[in-house]
Image (cartoon, rainbow, N blue to C red; front, side, top):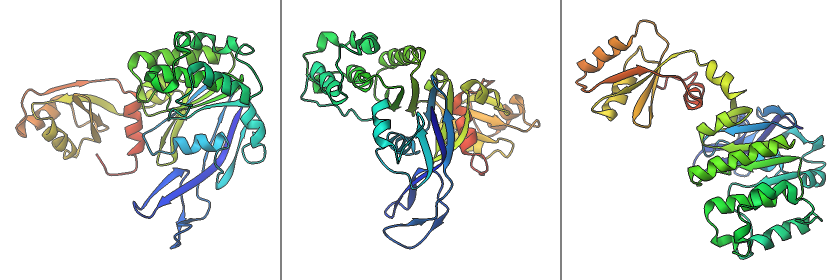
Length: 328
């Protein structure tokens, strides 16, 4: 359904001195117009029909760049990508007929009503709301009471449902959703993912990006992305099961000092703040919970709590993104 091979697209900011985009740049010259030369190392992956494939990573990781290439809005610098067997460069018109795209930023017409927006997008694709109503029914019935309200006056969750309805109105076979739940309340997020599961059951292939690590478990497979590179592609369960280190949650009366002292301990592999605790990764059998507690007591900590925990996707992401570095 989706085939991507060595796809690469770079942006380089002279102001920030940082690379952004998808893939990994290799060479740099002194030119202002083309600060990066060479084709770099691109990303490769495939998504079969009827799968929910998640792209999980922080802002600026390259998620939107990838989506814009696959929906034919921008051209890659190198590599190839096909959607439904159509090349994103050569067959862009055919791809636009069979995909639905919901960008991260609400981009419908704010001055048009809910009903007018739907009618407009249906007309663009030479169809009608009635013709494909069965596909959007479960979503549209939640916003139908507000069909005469202007889109700009809708709540965040309602805007999200309208945007999804507009992306589906022409009955696409592949759906691209770029951070669809960003800025949406938890209840609407849960409802939205329930909608995606129903769409998958109808055979629609879904590529969805999100910065929320907890949404990874709702996908069939995920790709963890950072700085334009995929760190790992697998099912959420397999990624978590491959976490090899011991993982503890630690607390004390001074959380800032706790993080510093943990990172100064040579037996601690990594430590990061997670909510109200610090997650401590240990790959050395010499360090035990009692031994770490004693170390913290000697560093003037009080009310120390340390206990083993199960890793999450976020723990796996932090481990993968920091592998090969000396950072704790």
